[in-house]
Length: 175
Image 1 (spheres, rainbow, N blue to C red):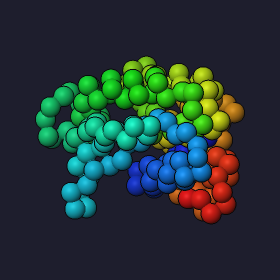
Image 2 (image 1 turned 90 degrees about the horizontal axis):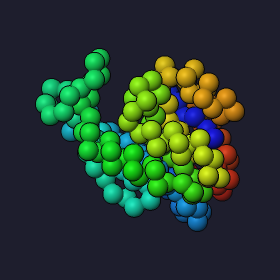
Image 3 (image 1 turned 30 degrees about the vertical axis):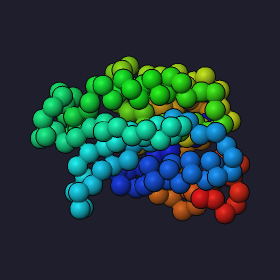
């Protein structure tokens, strides 16, 4: 299991997407969720959730000022509770698989015990050949305590893609 971390904008989701595509191209069964940002021009306007098995996409979050839903204290985004529940279901059905990707497990899951708790269970199950789990730098201590054997890879570090491709047993030219 590998924890992918990095600051906002470091390309964690893009890295996971590229590795998912390369794994699929190598005939591997990929499951889990990606959460790409949605932009209007250069302004981030939301976050989507993408089921890596089916490709189904739903709008997970919008900016706090857009209304709808109740933002958690100190959080920038308003999460759609129905999409959170849908994503939890996706993660509950994700394993077994060859490659599990969970983008991301954050304060909801690691501190509050809600959100994508099925993602925690999927990772804990070990019912995969390899797993990539995105965790914010501020939550690495908590994630490391839960998964002490996990390798931690900074998405922005030189060679991160090649290191992760090797970890997923992908061809050297991937992604």
